[in-house]
Image (cartoon, rainbow, N blue to C red):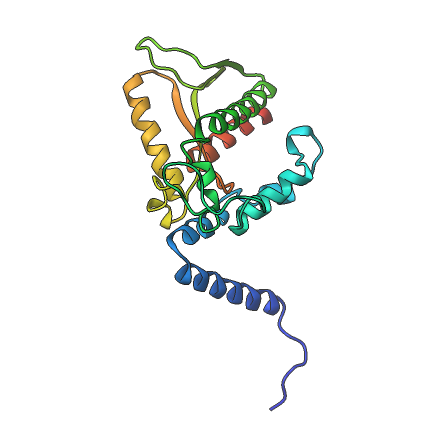
Length: 231
């Protein structure tokens, strides 16, 4: 029997896909609960988009130090080399074993979360403005409740709440054992809040996971705003 020296078209790609899938499955099976949450999140939709973004504008540009931090985060490495072995908070968390504890630490959370939240909110507001839509930050409603952003325009009446959550945080790690489990949990909590508002607007929680994955509602909102830009 004679065999062709030339492989069928696409054979090498198919072979590598199967090898990489097997390796990914082995990592998921052997990893800890925190590792599995990270593995699944970094494979989520848009989680790796920042790696291929063209730095044509300020909001698409990362400094060298920010890029290093992002890479270390995705690899599950300590974010800084000179960190103490344990956090000084009441949990005394091992920072080498759980480097993302810094995202949910009670001593750091309030200020860092607010800064990150406001940066993302301003990006979303600017994008909606480019679509020729009217925006209002932190609108207050008749029942005293408040959302992060109202986006208004012809055929567009949207309330948005922004959140970035860490899949490895104690609150979310159990649910994050499946793809977008952390984002889905947060989206459901925000949607329950919207039901109490009883408003005619279309409500969209804009939830991102700290490894970059976008929640389903965030993806739908992006598509809706992109359609407005196209129109």
